[in-house]
Length: 180
Image 1 (cartoon, rainbow, N blue to C red):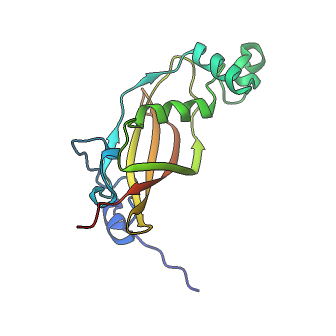
Image 2: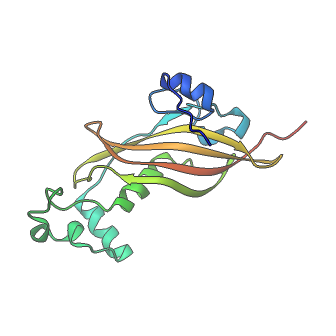
Image 3: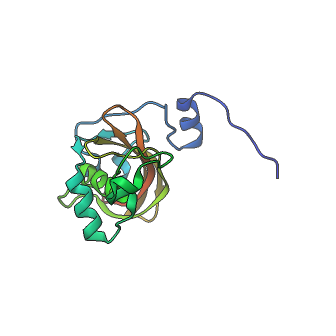
């Protein structure tokens, strides 16, 4: 089988491939994206969350709650001389959990379930005192049945300086509009 390369602007690639690509147009609508049914979501539809500062107390509580007391989270002395941590850092999964807390819309709605994450990367350590926010963008949509659709969201967690701390794809099951 011969490989084919697709070249073009992010917008052109999104249009041709049916999958949103970073750098393509982002669409901001008036409601939280979890309030829209499958058919109402557009590729590139984007939601930017508020912010949350991660404290040393958050890191310590998360470590004790989960049992993840890895030295980079708990021992300032032991982390000295680490090749890329300047000091104690937040757990990647704490950052992920706080990101979900920033973008999840709690009341019942068309988004029915989160069923996984793909391509998770912890790109930059998050230090105590760093503030994070999340960009959530509709990347792909696939119909599952007459009642359900699958939506893949491109998620980017950034720090107050705009640096990417984590990125991944969130997979959700979303209700379709009732047939009339």
